[in-house]
Amino acid sequence: MRRFAVISVRFGSARRWFAILVLSLLTALSLAIAPAQARNLFATEQTQNLFVANQSTNTIREFSQTGVDLGYFATTGLNGPTGLAFDKRGNLYVSNINDNTIREFSRTGVDLGNFATTGLSSPRGIAFDKHGNLYVANVSWIREFSPTGVDLGNFATTGLNVARGIAFDKHGNLYVANAGDNTIREFSRTGEDLGNFATTGFIAPALIAFDKRGNLYVTNFGGNTIREFSRTGVDLGDFATTGLSFPAGVAFDKHGNLYVSNRGDGTIRKFSPSGADMGYFATTGMTTPVGLAFSPEPDDQNGDG
Image (cartoon, rainbow, N blue to C red; front, side, top):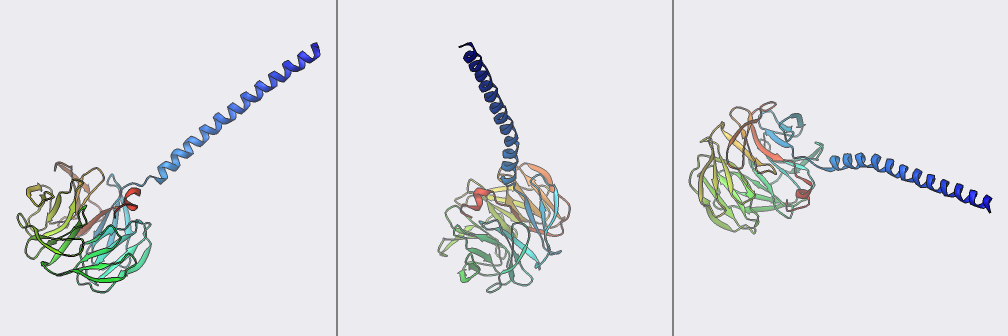
């Protein structure tokens, strides 16, 4: 009986030691996995880098979200790169004004060749709709292409006068900056001409962008200002007037900060959501910067484009 009790005690002790060993192993495993999970989450969390089209040097420059110059993203297949836009997959599209093409690059910068070559004449601003179709501003018409590059013909031909920047609002209407007559023209999602959206405060408007509230921002290339309009077209005056030198491209980051490419001095200027001048965001690696685009976040790539 005593021998059985001793055996039971020893067996109980062994069981406790086994439980402690298992617990220790699980704890060590959890500690080992946690950093790996953190690294994996960090790796899959995509940052918003800024891409800049250098028109005269035929390059695309990339900057981190803090303004660090990451060097050239693309140097091939470019001939007067002007407009930039990302599709839902994260591929970058570039309008070449000198050879009338749209060039496509993978998210890692691989040159995928020409996406479109027909129906284009000095293409500048480009934008995707929620279906993944690409729209291109030509001198006096807007051309539409399917997600695979099929030429769908002219989307709009009226009310356009040296068309520059284009952008979609949240309703799918398309807005076009006319540098020739200093207006912003609006078109329905089906291409119906809705007339002038804005006509005041412009001197050679260039590229345009909407903020999260639906207000429209326009670079005044000839006036060195950024003009703001409400979603209904009310002129809200100059959003920014300092630190600008022939402003061309414009883009918002996920925090609502506005970035402007200065074609005149080869810099990128940053402004807060309230219009405060935050100084230079980037000053290196740029010559005649024009189009700007932030790399899409994961949600953006699966969203409305």
